[in-house]
Length: 133
Image (cartoon, rainbow, N blue to C red; front, side, top):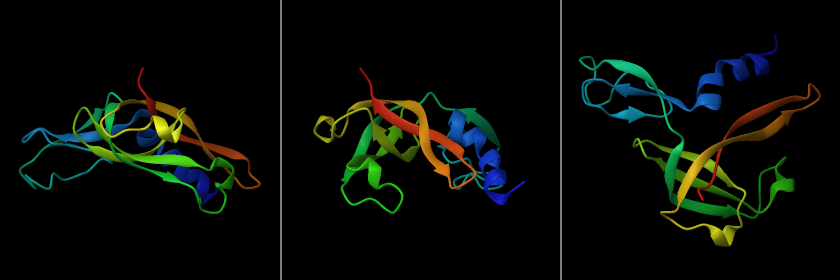
């Protein structure tokens, strides 16, 4: 199995289910998952949690000069999303025009194609967000 494929399969829980962790002592939630709570340290107990995928735009930017391999997407928006459960994450904002975006607007999780791996043709999917109706 190639290293690229191995990495792909190891990331499935976070990539396809928006799985993070929660400290049972202080209640803080984390994404990506953590093995240790930075607040409680060794006295904390961490458990896996699946997030709802709902949140709001905390900040965003529109990319007009994308990195190599993503030129076909321009312009596209990237946002910092604050999940309703608390954690922040960065993701592409899709199915909207840049002028429709606004800080504080509600968004919801969608799974979309991110990229196809070179000659192997393996398509990698991942989380993105769209404006919530």
